[in-house]
Image (cartoon, rainbow, N blue to C red; front, side, top):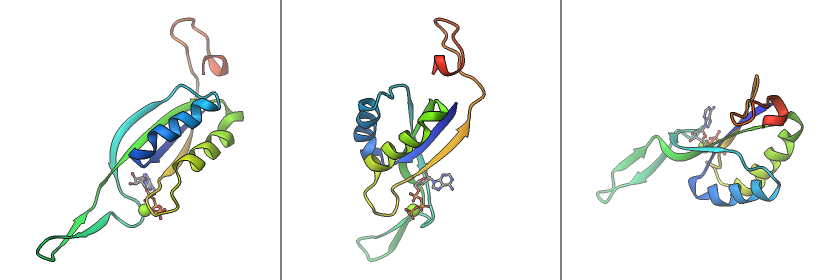
Length: 113
Ligand SMILES: Nc1ncnc2c1ncn2[C@@H]1O[C@H](COP(=O)(O)OP(=O)(O)OP(=O)(O)O)[C@@H](O)[C@H]1O
Ligand SMILES: [Mg+2]
């Protein structure tokens, strides 16, 4: 099992979630986060012409645990639905997961995902 941790644009959540659901992936968590990438935020110009640096930008963290065999499919779905082609589209991290337990039944491993 793997945990997919995807940082995406908040406005992309609906399309990403719907695309995952269409492919049969339902279980997931989301968290509102602030973060920065390689450009270290964005610079606005204020009314007086001054530079206003916004370092940490609002992003959405999506986390889901999936079977190993589904990792590439889920990555493809997230890329295709979250991408605009502009900087700040986000990032995906893949973590190993030791086990999964469904509380209702006690099932474990892939069967519980
Ligand atoms: N190395 C990292 N570790 C943890 N979180 C990251 C990392 N890089 C980016 N993030 C998170 O992802 C968000 C979006 O990053 P972003 O897409 O700007 O990455 P990037 O490497 O700058 O790529 P791009 O050049 O396409 O903008 C950041 O705001 C931050 O929340
Ligand atoms: Mg960036």
